[in-house]
Length: 369
Image (cartoon, rainbow, N blue to C red; front, side, top):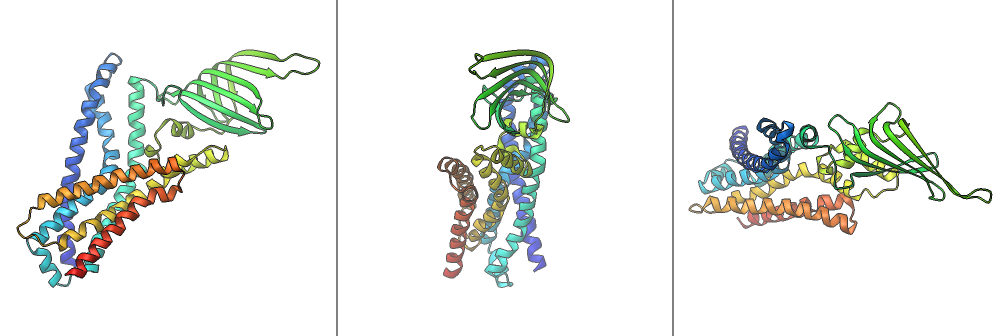
């Protein structure tokens, strides 16, 4: 049995490695073409071809994380179809490789792919993405989202704060900061603060070039009054950290699972909708497990009889199945967010559907033999 495992594992690893390298080379080319426009924009600031190549190289871990399940499916289908067409798999079956043992053998290898996918998706890719964002911010402008930047909320001692950060510089400097203070009981606007720049201090945000407007409510003895104060420096005590601001500015699929969990807790504590981030959190939990689903999908191809068949046709079917899984995974995320589905269900549904289909096909082919 050890010899059989060594044979299957070596063939699958070679095939998956070849498919992965082909996909990464293709996406590397596409990313480099996309960087041509950035080269023209940042040429005056020193953004050279070397920096563009470095930026594209930093995108490779994220592409590997996204493409590895599809590469596992295509590579395994190719190996299973080739073994079936050359009757090698028939010989392996007569040597004691039963259906359940074959399934367990592939799932054991799938666990290794799950571990690789998890490591790249939760550690390597987020670190590489942060480095890439910092590199581009150094030459092409600060990190921002949309035209208005990122909006966040904070609660402190009977006060609610709505905070807007226009952009985040590569050195961690906050730019175009606006803070709106509201009374917790009545919702009345108490003050507004505008700052050109800011940095994260030990006890809050250290803001520079500050303009504060305080609004005093009208009483029987006095008219409503607006007090304007301009300060060179001012410290705002808050628990909003650099990671939270970065999470609001970055796409949730580029974050670590732990960072997503902490940011979801922050949103829920401040009464904000965290549906999008909860779905992405569960997707990051379930997505590495899709490598096991791909293994189960590929195994039925070993039980097909096509001695004179065309293996390329079956590999093409594998490509279509992998693309459909990837698309369905994204569609369920968007639909779940729009329809307010349970986050774990929206994230796990594609894997459950494809697992049932593959197990059904596997059982039908085995029982038909």
